[in-house]
Amino acid sequence: MDDVVIVGAGPTGLTLACELSRRGRSCRLVESAPEPSETSKATVVSPRTLEVLDLIQVADGAVRRGRPIDAVCCYAGGELLTRLRPDPGVATRFPFPLVLPQRETERLLLARLAELGGHPERGRRVVSVRQHRDGVVATVEGSAGTEELHSRWLVGCDGAHSVVRHEAGIGFAGDRYPQTFVLAEVRADTELPADQGHFFLSPHGVVVFVALPGGTCRLTVDMPGPLTGDPGVEWLQRGLDRRGVSAVRVRTVDWVSPYRITNRVATAYRRGRVLIAGDAAHLHSPVGGQGMNTGIQDAVNLGWKLDLVAGGAAADALLDTYEAERLPVARAVVRGTDVVSRLGLVRAPGADRARVFAIRALARTGLVRRLAARATQLDVAYPRSAIVARPRAAGLVRPGRRAPDGALVAASGNCVRVHELFRHGGHTLLVFATEPDRTGPVLALASARGVSAQLLGRLPGAGAGALADLEGAVHRSYGVRGDALVLIRPDGHVAAAVPEAGVRAAHGALASLPRTPRAEAAG
View (tube, one colour):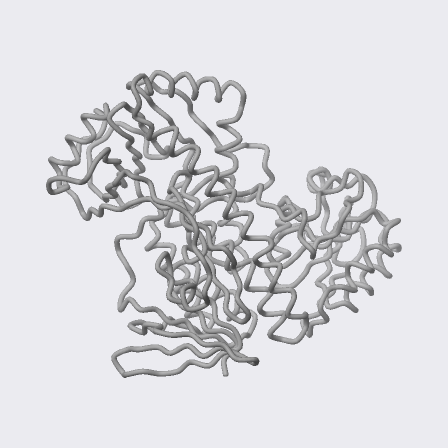
């Protein structure tokens, strides 16, 4: 019996397979499609997704293949209304959204999974799922016939029409936009900057234009009514001209696909030993490019929890925190993308003037910038989760939030990023200290609980294995003024943060962690 069977080899399923495989869990990944799709919808990888992909050593390849976005421009009536740029003050190695077609993201994940000894079993369709006390049985059909796959848990990453969700009896509440959209990958002559995304609003509809690496461009055009005619070069060009997008001249069309936007969120993410993730759990407007990114982060949140429960290092209740943490994130994404989409799609008389006025007013208040910042997903947090400490110590980084990144200097003189310390896959205890002789008990405590410990000191050589924060930037980003302990979860979120005076409180937080055989201690 395998630990986990994953249904669906899109970005979410592939990420989950990588997460489990790198932790030594036995998993099978089945996919109904015989070949990967070349007409993928997702084109943007968010900064937070790049951070979590870095944990499984995929981010560098993504950056090499992709194109960073410097800004997103919004136009109406041929006029540039606002230009949104990433916040330069965020402590991250990836301070930019990355344009990368979904097919390339999948290729990188497939290559990483192969390095870990895994592969998707293609052309295998799940037709039924049944649970029993100790596991799940999935019946799959393929060219070789019918087979029953036995596993301790089953995760449905099988998209909008998820068989796993249906078989588990999980509802999928929501509605559909009346408009039809056309998604196309084209080759075009354009004067628009390739390092920016472009969002055009007009009384006749919306156009989103993104230049892809490799010379093609992605167009999204909405249709006020039913699609009529063949959406080829002439059809697309008429749609662009009608919407005032004169800076794009379509030469050829590689592929085109009509689709409808649906806002839906699953009523639950878990039923017993069956869980769902990605598009099987949430669907929404593509504004901000958050769909694939939310799914990948679902997988990272779930992966380490499945590992600990499967290994007997944590109680089954840990899996309940997956839904508790990720379901509110999906609901927030749906609400945010719906507001922006409806603002752009309204067609009432005078709507264009009202829309321009609203966008300018919102830009002045900073709300548009905050919505753009939310699309980076760097602000995703779980402050009310049962597995993060409450309350936080005054001034220190808030538990549940993403752990800030930053540069440190090792004794060898090499630069080390804080997030590099999290790649081992377990919990990490950051020990902020200025006096090396006071760190012994802390390191002993960390090692005893199976937590990887890293010593962070302000001064070079502040103890064996110390990492120097020469300018104090890391201390400031974590809100540390003296000595402190910060416990980081395997997904890079803060579990607890206490000043050294609160070591007993830290011991309580550590006591709730699983004992694992992967104990490491630095120093």
